[in-house]
Image (spheres, rainbow, N blue to C red):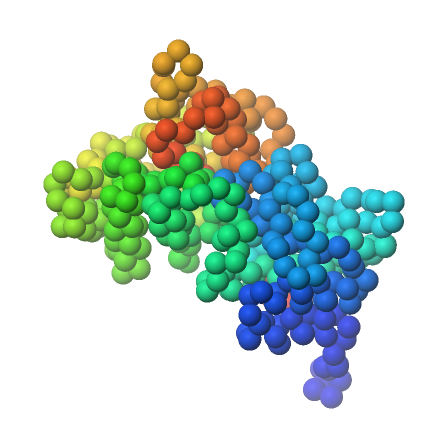
Length: 407
């Protein structure tokens, strides 16, 4: 096709989205809200709300801002906003004077929140344009979040401890999804967590993941977790083996805190093309392998000392995943909580909760993990005395090369 035949004129959609792109770099965080409202008004929309997930992942809270409609928080379960958030899909609710649209705010595959607005009528062109607008809004919120407290304050529903502030600043996005693999994590208690953390990175075909639990509570535990995750990331980025990552973390904790401090850890490599999984389990409960909604076994591995004890070379256990398999990692705060009667919650009760959830239709990994978290919390009587982490990997395999090819 000759260059003279290519149409480079600016259409309506490009003008609308281009304005946001052109101004994003210089836009102060407090002006995001009025610009979004103006953009939506440009296609006939009104009553715009931006809803962000709270730290406990229980409700979606409205972002205050000029020209935004600020209503009540929307529950994550049983609300149109919650359904849009958990399904990562648009939800439309007919009203007396129009249609209320709830669009997931997706930064890559991490769910930031939901944008809600009302249109008189909705057509396919509206849906396409608004999905793209929501994607740009999510990118702006994530970018500006790096240098403002505005979004943090909106998401915070109760006072947060200093150790929890440190831990939340340490975390990667709570979810990540590509065609071959997805991950999601939950930390409890959200506003008081101290020693639990998780981290992951997708480098080429290898998913690197770690779940840790630093001994103790408060700032001491948060400091140990920070060193452990920092050492893990450093080791990961110099392309060393799983065993060497463990040794590097062990050395860092020992040098910084001495022999009377330790961090339990699970370190994993998952080849997202083949499903091959390598596991080092240093003091954690064994992960659960979930297939077709049921726990089929625990992923056992050779005993390895917690990080900081100067353990010997860890023995790596290999497992082979099947497409659709889920691996659930959890820290001991989940199973060592005392329930009514004083008995421990225990692994068998956790397995029963996972299987009961599997008896219901899946709503997607993120939604299922959140439902599991809420079920476990109810089973424990709402108590979370110790830090408690859930981290799930779902493997599908296949390739994603088609996403880099223009149709």
